[in-house]
Length: 305
Length: 319
Image (cartoon, rainbow over all chains, first blue to last red; front, side, top):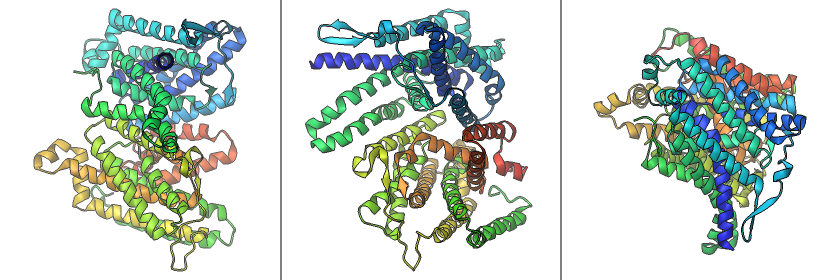
């Protein structure tokens, strides 16, 4: 019984972690290459989810909607980069925080005007039911698909970054921007493309998580902080770090919420345990981050030497 | 400003005194006109000005980009609220305790965070603030997620009743004016000079022989303590505390006030709090989509007025 519960929660953690990875991958690239704190990353995730919900209603197909939302969000991301964010690269982190915080306010309000505070987005009917993966464990087939999509995107990202020319330029930009510029890389165009790419990843995460969480205004803010925790744990600018960090955060967070209250009950009075458990479970990933930063101030996989 | 004394210092001193006089006179005018709402609103602005000023000490003068300042405001607010719930209503016990607790919390968090720098410092202060936020959410005995109502405002004695909004206004004004005066003195004194010098060139200060880590920690803890005082006032003003006081967008708001007002300028926190809260109030009078307007104005300020409002007024940033 407990083994099955453990397996189920690990899968949940993996599923959540992989979606966090999609957010963190874009964030870590923007952060690492452009040295830019982009709080508005969560807004792109929100926009992606809302676009997916609209397209799903228009076309009637969930997967078509995910694809359309991906393209739409990438275009919006590139437009945002070219119009506003580009002017902020040379500025200090404070200005970037202020400007992208302003963009969060604007994006939230625009989404509220266009769509209202919340829209429905449901899982595709074919994936609505559970499947039996081991005897005694019926697991949501939709969550399994999320895991598969997450791994597929991670593999694609690895190939794109490690095996293509564009990926080489991205890595060059992340490890030493000035040198990359000096070697003739068109850094302006590269930034726009990377940003659009990051926005597309946001859209996938938003659209895939939409049916599980709620598609609502402000959905980006809570997950944004988790994505930042992930990239700080993984090491800013490192895709591999983002993957490891995301799975670590996803699993620790999910496991903590599932098992910590019960674990505490073994040691503490019941009322104290039920009061402490949820709080402690929420804190766990921040403790993890503080501990990792304490021993490895540059994160697990520092991108710069 | 405090960096070195520009020629217009006397001028600025007169303007500051004029503003102070206007602030003192405000309830005398507002009261007969029954602008009670605006007296409360002005108190709220001044409380946020105090919180933003405390962040300005850390962020502007100390150069430490703390993204978790709301935790200290929240710690102060919760200290007052919890003591009130336990039957301790005296401001003379609750407020100093709020200051001490917030300061001690800041000292503990700062001691760990100050080992990192740059972006990592921003993120780790944020992480600690989120921890405190979840502690507040987890305190079921004191409202948990719902928050906690205060039965009354703190009792100060001397025949003063804080439940009277005008009295409360003057108490807040006195504290804010005292804090700004103290900040001015502290930044002109040896402590302030050293902190600013560390911001400008830490390696050199260390080489000269200053214990830079200790100076930064004291600066960080002081900022937290003053934020705790602002929190104590805020709990009284709202007669209500909830975990949202500690949520990260609150830290973001305080940071925005400081950046908006002018990082490292004496009146930066004050300008920023006035500008942001008045802006919110004005735009929300026209449309429920006020965040759109606030966002647009903020964006315009970052893009076109990089030094903030105080920077616009001062023209030359001397350093």
